[in-house]
Length: 130
Image (cartoon, rainbow, N blue to C red; front, side, top):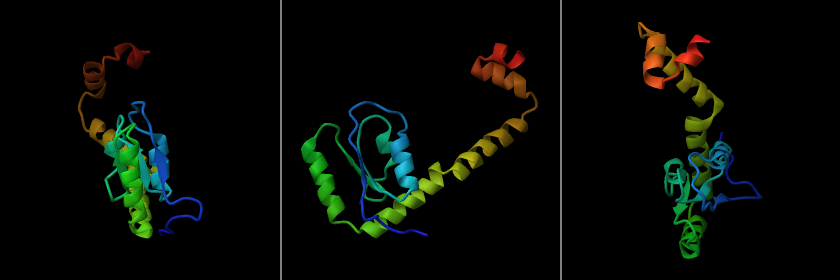
């Protein structure tokens, strides 16, 4: 069940200037139903669906951050929080992670030569044999 924004925060701001592939802060915020306001640095925009589970602004641009904060203030906080929680649970929860691992495992177990496949595609023959 979605409980909506907490009394202490309506959103989490991730103003990164540094390129990060997959921000744990963003994933954990979404899992806990906190919309995220993130800079467009690195992989952040791939984790946020604008105006659905948060907002994206141009890294280092204070005016653009102000624009998305204004947009947040005018949005339905309960809907935004519920959508953040939904996307967080769907993509980043431990259950979602295990499900995707099992899907990969099931695909690999259906191959006839699993070790050969890994050796040819991952260049790890010494690790597999040891």
